[in-house]
Amino acid sequence: MKPVIILENISVKYRAHEESIKTFKEYAIQLLKRNVKIKEFHALTNVDLQVNEGEIVGVIGRNGAGKSTLLKVISRVLIPTDGRVRLRGRVSPLLELGAGFHPELTGRENIFLNGTLLGHSRRELESRLPEIIEFAELDAFIDAPLRTYSSGMVARLGFSIATTWRPEILILDEILSVGDEAFRTKCKTRMAKYRDEGASTLLVAHDMNTIGTLCSRAVWLDHGEVKAMGPAKEVVSIYRQSQPVKK
Amino acid sequence: MENYSSTKDMYSFDEMEFTYDSAKRRSPALEELFSIIRYRDLIYQLVRRDIVARYKRSILGVLWTMLQPLGMMIVMSIVFSQLFGHVKGYSAYLLSGLIAWTFFSQTTTAAIHQIVWGGSLIRRIYLPLTAFSISSVGTGVVNLLLSVIPLLLIMLIVQRPITWAILFIPIPILLLTAFSLGVGLILSAFAVHFPDIKEMYQIIIQAWMYLTPILYPADIIPEAYRNWVLYLNPMYYLISMFRTTIYDGALPASDILLIGTAISLTTLLVGWVYFSSQMDDFAYIA
Image 1 (cartoon, rainbow over the protein chains, first blue to last red):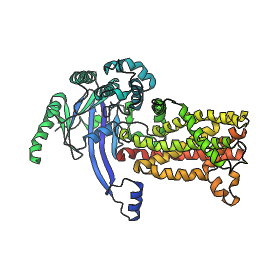
Image 2 (cartoon, each protein chain N blue to C red; image 1 turned 135 degrees about the vertical axis):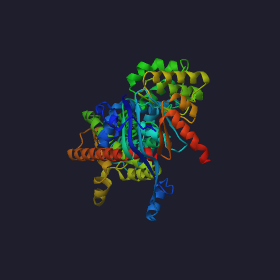
Image 3 (cartoon, chains in turn cyan, purple; image 1 turned 60 degrees about the vertical axis):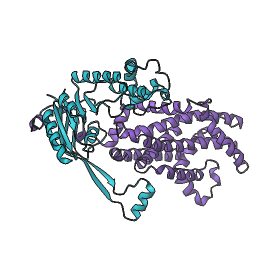
Image 4 (spheres, each protein chain N blue to C red; image 1 turned 90 degrees about the vertical axis):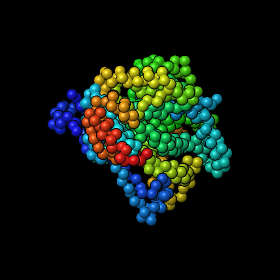
């Protein structure tokens, strides 16, 4: 089994000013008053995680437990304050559908804008263009400005661009909420196909049944620390037992 | 409870196969350079977006880029031509300085806007963050080249000869680009922390413009102030270089060229290194 993600001793510390200082003017004033205090917030503490090729790993935990921070570290958005990240292959950009879409540009122009933001070259995009348009079901509207699209159409286009290339590491945050029922099914089918083709998946969900049935292993994050890790069903049951006590 | 397979197993595979390793990063400035080269198509798309989106719903379209400095030049010419009547072909003198200045002020301001706009992206997807400043400057270069057309027209009208020296113009443009990119990078690194840098910068740039010989000839500055107003002002070298090749129809003096090159390249280097060193923090703040 080849590991595709290795996180070693990952810590993420956010440093924020104690009082919210939003402008340079405020900062200068507070600095003169010697009032600038830095508050540290530990989003992740000493997290170790290894995901192997073809594995589906669930990430569970309450809101603010550090799930999104973990995904950000894996998708290279956040450089961890401490620890080492190693990745093999491309990480899917599912965190942001339709990044940087511009309303005045046509659907076709937006494919190139969004696609290059996600790191694809123009040539790559040109060769997959028909496929992207077809999957988004936008053949008739692709040369109309994006501002004329419905929100469902925009979401479909975003999803289609983001998932046309099969990533080695698939990140699924929450349950897909794109477009109508039929399109959702189509999306799930595509995700399942990539998974079957050997993409490793990191699934974040609040629905414990999804985690229990889909994932082989699970990680439970609590206040930025790994509370439990192991076979998905075991972790889910430990997590469930712990919940009523906290209420 | 089972942890990941075993610690031994973790280190037994070939490490070279990893495509990303946070422990094996080169210097941030170099890393960013390689990254932006891979993302070069993004720069093109961002520049294209700025230009296409700006003109899509306007009747005159790209003509606006040429009309805007022209309009400003006409107003200023009327106001100041009495004062600076001794400058030959004052309109051409003014316009050539104005175009170079507009390039600088617009691209640096745009760099701030772009990084603030990109804030929501920075928190969600990985991309080389210098792309925002570089594309701002790229858009500026397109606009600058377009506004050279009305400048040549004015040269003909006020009967200034256009000489072969104009072929030298890519050099001043390149140096202006390098300087503006350096300043844009420094400003946008600040702007991530403090968005109100934008307002502060507008005041600075107004003052800076009037301290630079754009609408008045450099020789009206009294000898005593020249050190401050001219020789310590980077834009003096860059603007006079640009202006010389068109308005004077001559090659820039070698000392101006030398100092201008040194200032531009140093600013770019400092801006790039500083921005790269701050970059890792952006996703934490933005």
